[in-house]
Amino acid sequence: MYLSKIHVSWDQAKNPYDLHRALWKLFPDCQDDKRDFLFRVEKIQTGVGADVLMQSIHKPLPNEASLVLVACREYPMAIKNEQQLRFRLRANPIKTIKDESKGKRERKGRMYTKTVRVPLITEEQQLDWLHKKLAEVAVLDTVIVQKETPLYFHKRKVSIRGKIQTACFDGILTVRDSNAFIELIKQGIGPAKSFGCGLISLAPT
Image (cartoon, rainbow, N blue to C red; front, side, top):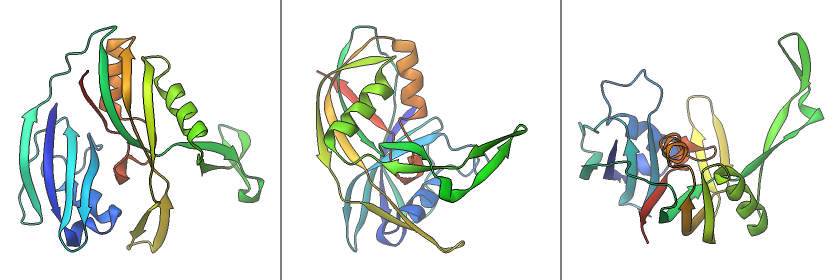
């Protein structure tokens, strides 16, 4: 596992969808593979670009001017049960509900009402979502929720515009199941990983 800091040029960073596609270019030998990296935009400046923190299975290999590999180091997963850690997580807290207006679909011979994702807006809802995501692996000791503005994106090839509502969590947790927690770190937490959500950063308390 590797942890890297990357600077992405403004042309690639101004649209979250393009930023994700640009980061793929750091893995020229894995273009057809399932994405095995997570990232979080730490800072973005209009006309300048974005500073990105990225966690990846493979070592990134910069090959064009729009992507600058500022730093890269191996990221050992040395985590123990009952260990207390500081964490930061940008996530897309949502719930899935049935929507009759979307109609039905057939799956394995049965009909199901289609579902939609609904963002969780209140701090109480977002905290409850995070508690559930970590319930089997860790306990939240303290946590602060930072409200964030919606993230807008544009998929040009299919002319789709959309937005997601993110929240940033900072706090302290205690690990209960280290093996399962490590797997969760690798997979990321929640949806919208291609838009910079799901990466949980850890540090000693």
